[in-house]
Length: 320
Image (cartoon, rainbow, N blue to C red):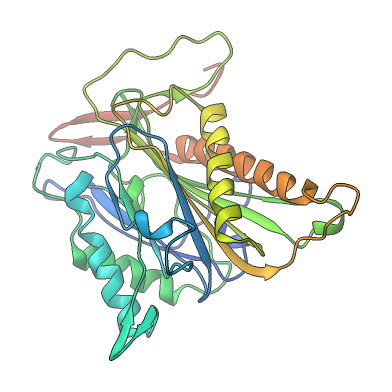
């Protein structure tokens, strides 16, 4: 699904080679979907899970000490743990296109996934993402031209997203940040699915009351910089700071806040010998800022929804 939103601060697809595809359903009791980030072959992957109630698939494979450092796709899905079945459809698409870790007789695609809780928001608790929906989203990503826009708000995994304890509508957002100085060729982008327990952070605002909704914010941060697996993991960790700057509260016992990091390794970081780690620190700071902007973009682009299960209105902007 292709689109662009006005007022956005770039997109994760500003990172060369990164494509995003989405699938969703909004009728007959459905209000859910899938977003797939499809990186170029050879992309390094990592993850940092901070929520106390995550729904994830294949995240152990992203530990820097494991066998395969690369990732073939990342799946963000609705449907809670049930929706992780969508990853199977993405794996099927990857296998059909020869993407995966080579083994005798074929390939094994490395497709980590994470889910938000949106069960029943369309009116039917059993209406949740399937392998076929995952395949549809992967197909959408595979067909996307490089740099294509992304539908924001009520699209993909953001279709059934809510926030503020299930009171307001959440959604998908995206943004990008470019590094400075000798590293202006390096881009860091983020894609976020805002289904948060909290609300956008504002000075002096109290945390929202606990609602009935179960909660999670999911994100993918991507860069074209050359990173090791350990550096990508640290970048995912650093990006969580952007989540904390955008939302209050985050990383609660009842959510599954998760950040994936991808490095396409196309551009070496220019290193200042006086401060060898300076460029990496700037990149990780940019990851946090890109995620902050992506979360706020997802909040701003969310549209009102009414189903048999209830009504979700957008969160009012500051000063409204």
